[in-house]
Length: 210
Image (tube, rainbow, N blue to C red; front, side, top):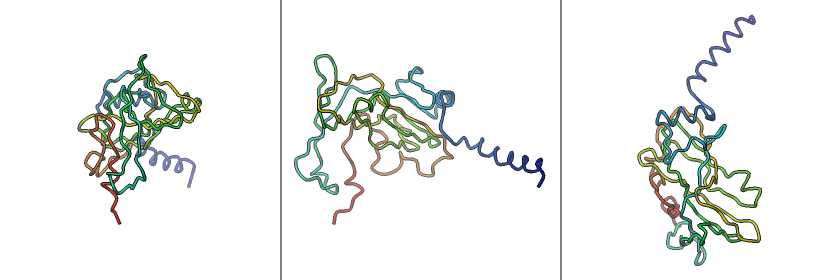
């Protein structure tokens, strides 16, 4: 095969990959996805669009997890209680050492079946000993019919309390283009796709008790 033939063959492979729009969305693509409605964010602030992610902010509510004994994942009655955490006098969220806090993002989002998200904490928080995690994946169709918050798990690994401020940047949502999903997340059973606030685990709905 000559060089010209080889180059022609490479071009044939490049065209379908371009059309498929696979890969991470950069800032321009994120803004286009928002303009086209494939990505829905409320409230949306263009200042939080980063080179390859959209920053999300901490909401105003938070809940501690209070267990009463052994947790059986197949028995919802044994699950930890979600205990509301009030903000302090200056409007700050106090996270005690070793405490696990569930808190929603300020933004509600919706993804088309052609988008996949990945949520991760930021380096700024990690360098302070604070983990911001939960399930990192945001599936195609999340919040598609009704915009939903993303629930974050915040853990303080320090020996002293940490004070967090609602409406400040807390995590990044990286977005990937895909070829679409046959069964988007919002039509799957027991999903969190329409949650407007932090919801308790629905794991018991998926687990068979023996």
